[in-house]
Image (tube, rainbow, N blue to C red; front, top):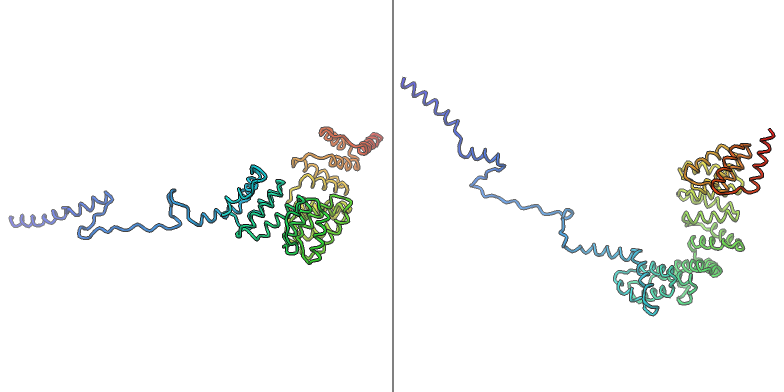
Length: 407
């Protein structure tokens, strides 16, 4: 039995060993709950270096200076900034007396200026009516090699002096002047009312095979067209413009010339300008469409004018009041009562107030179709607008009333 007891004791001892926890095991398990992994005391603790910061993620403290390239770009912004350059003109204008030189203002900013910068300042001085200050600014720029020679400021100075009839103050060789300078001189002469001189300059340039920009011709045409006695000169300029191989016109310039051509009844020029504009892959504006419709209406090509109305509608072009006036006038000429009524309703839905000629056209189309009640509705709108019918329209209404009563 004793042997059996000894055997039992021997069998129980391993069980006691398996249930016992070693100190290292206890420490390892407890460290898991403390979020710490024990290091082997035999190995030294290695401290990992922090990663190097990436340049694009680097956050600079507020106290550090701005990098050099930033300073360079800001100086570029200054010499190109229109508000800064116009501000220089205002500072020059506010100098205490006429004897004070522009250098008092410009010397402070000379390091920020570049070639072409002062052209804006010179033009602004011209708008302020200060041609002498503009010339002083040009003379000051001549003394600084990094600003001169420069045709841009020369052109601006020439235009300002020509506008104010002070061109004699600036002496330079016209034969050596660039195309930009000659164009500026012509524009200045036009603005100053020297139309004969401007015309002579254009002719001289043409004889010397110097082709001036199309905008110069447009400016000349628009100015001369103000005087009906000089329409023959306008026709000559238009012919020169038409014969040019290459046109460079903005949409506004093109539309302005088209309007002049309608007034002169040069409808073929209107058509060619409109075709040229569309061929240059540009979308006509509502003003250009209106001008074209009015041109074809004036030529009594009503069906062709109506095709432009559909083209304008398909291009999702929003009609303004002049467009509605021309379209309604066209529909009245076509005796298209239904469409005239629809466009009249659309006009009011768009928030426009009908003008007297629109009222008159609507009364005309209703009178022609014998719609007396509709005529009375329009007459009420005319009264509400504070307008009075002309004698011819009143007479036609009276005739319609008599015809209706006799039936």
